[in-house]
Structures are given as structure tokens and as C-alpha cells.
Length: 443
Image (cartoon, rainbow, N blue to C red; front, side, top):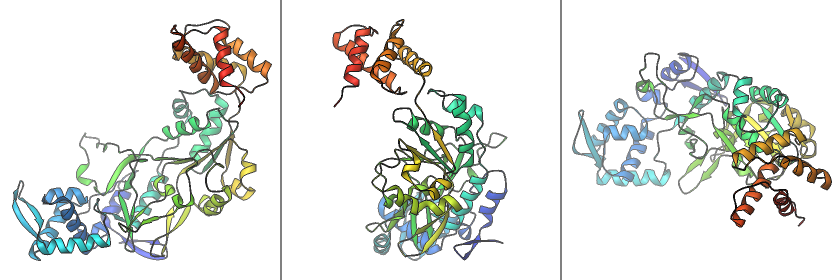
């Protein structure tokens, strides 16, 4: 038996989980073979089964196994024990030596009592210690990205090799990155593209359980399910897969001005008596992008105080509704995208813990022209000699800075003007002037 210490408590790690951890280069949640290997008590699974019956009515034993994520071989004895206690009854036979079950009158009362304590009826959770091991194993086993990976991820936007050489090491550090510079130059677009080159899939549980508290982890807004891979002989390893876990693309969590401190803590719903995982837990083994940093409803100093230790030690401390503090891995690439200089936002202590600061500056005229011509072709304009030069003269005469977003924006206005005139898209100088007048009008 191998023991692991979490929060100064010793937890027994079941052999099924260990075989998943140690059986290969990547984490694989092996299907539990008995009740002990689920890490949950019989009373907890009993309560979950009764609540699912209360919500759905009649179910077969195998359907209940699918709902709970617990193998039929583990669920079936529990169902028979509940039938013996007259909590459920046989309705009719089902295929493969199974039965359809439904709640008895006593079972309905018991289920309603359980529902009043906790209304969760999703797949069974996994113990906190199992989740901690999974994050540590998967974070350590992630492959670094290379130049070609990064170039492919940014193929749809304008960039140079110098930027790639700065971004690559930052991503592989799996720590912190500031993307800063003037607005309109694609910082958010770059940050979103970076998340696409992370590659690989990871496993997350639907929910985790500790000290009587259930924390929901899986979130459709951030977690994209991926197919289960096959073994070398083409056979899917489904029989070894613990259905309480879901295989997803490395997660990307993006938040902007709506970010508040509550999003970074365990949120308790008193109506269902369940908890929602904070954003940094949902982004473990992936990427957390804080867009337009400095414009949030919380002050940068508040975020500094909340994350200064996790950024340093790669460990986060969360407080459960019971008051118990739990220790969790803090393993993700954090990208702060901002129009402001980082020195103006946070102090030196915070900057030291975000080791990479990359400026996304204005394009030069050559790059601006390349972006302009790319959008001309993409938007279906007929080539017009001198159109880009005409636009650059406007910038020079007006003293405006070049921005990467502006060729697309100005061409969109020209296109809309042509639609209004009911003529094919064309880049006449007066049309460009009209678009610039509308786009840059002083308010």
C-alpha cells in the first residue's frame, strides 16, 4: 500500500489508481474493481443511487452504473442490498441478467431526505487525493511545444520569428506570461491562439469529494470532451476507463472584465449544498487567460494578494464551506493580456512571479501593408495598386499609430459603403478616405 500526504492527512491510494498512474507515461484512470477502490463509502453511493432514482424513475442496473460512473459489478450488489432493505423494487427483467428498478415508498422518503442534504445527481465524485495525484502526474508528463507547433498555432495572424522565440519558452515554462502593448495589435488573438498549440488531452473528474463537500469540476463552458484513444492493436481501452473521469482537450479558461474574487474561491450553492470549482482549478493542466488585465472589477492588488503564493509555489489553498482548508496543485499557464504597462499595474514582487513579459508592439509599414493585402484578398476586393500606400499616407499625415486590427476594420467599412452604393467591392481612394473619416472620427 502506498500512502500520500495531503493537508497533513494520510490518504490511502487504491491500487486501481496506482496502476493508472504507473502503468505508462500518461495518467489513466483505471476502472475500480470493488467498492474500496472507488474511494467512497457505501452510504455515499447508496444515497447517490436513491437520488438518481428519485429524479429519473425506473432504471436498469446497467443504466444506473452508467449514470453514477461506477461499474455494474460494483453497483449491482448495492442495488440488491437496497432491494433487501425494501428501498427499491424489481419492476421487470432487463437484458444480460439485469433488472429494472424503481423506488419503493420507503425509498422515496429516504431519497427525499438525501436530496435535502445534497441535490447532486451527476456521476460519482473522486476523492480529493486522487485528483491531486492526477494533476501532478499529468502536469509533469506534458510534452513541450516546439517552433513548428507555435508557428502552426499562429499561422492565421501576422507575427515574426522574434515573437515566436519569446513565446515558446514562456509557454513551456507553464507559469506566468504578460502580453502587453498598445490596443488593437492582437494580444487577445495571440493569447487565444497559444492555447490551441498546447495539444494533448488530459483527464479531469466530473466532481471531487472531501470532508463531506462535493466540488463540481467539469464545466461545458471550458472543457471539450475528446475521444478515448486506442491501444496499439486498435482496441479501445474502455474496459479500463473509470467513468467518473472525462478525457478533454487541455482546458482553456478565458475571463475578462467580469472577473471577481468570488470566481477564484470555492463557491457554495446553499440550495443544492454543492460547490463549484474556482477558475484556476478548472484550468489546471491547461491555460488561464485573464484578458484586459487591470480593467477587472477587482483591483490588480487584490489578485496579487490572492495569487502571490500560488504563483511562487505552484500550490493553491482553498476553503471549503465547512471551514476546512485544502491544498491543491496550481498547474497552468497563466496569461495576463493588457494594454497597460505591467510596471503600472502591480508591484515588483508580483512581476517577479510572472517571469515572462512580452510586448506586442505596433506593426511597421511593411507588416501593415502585408496585413492590408491579406485582408483585401480575404474579403474579395479586386487588387488596387497603391491602395495600401494611400492608406499609409493618411496615417503619416494624421500622426496616427499603425495597429494590426485597422486594415481589416477599414476594409470592412469600405465593403459596407460599397454595399450601400450597390456596387462591387472596390478600393477607390475616396472610398478609403470615407472609411477613415468614419473610423477615426473624434467623439
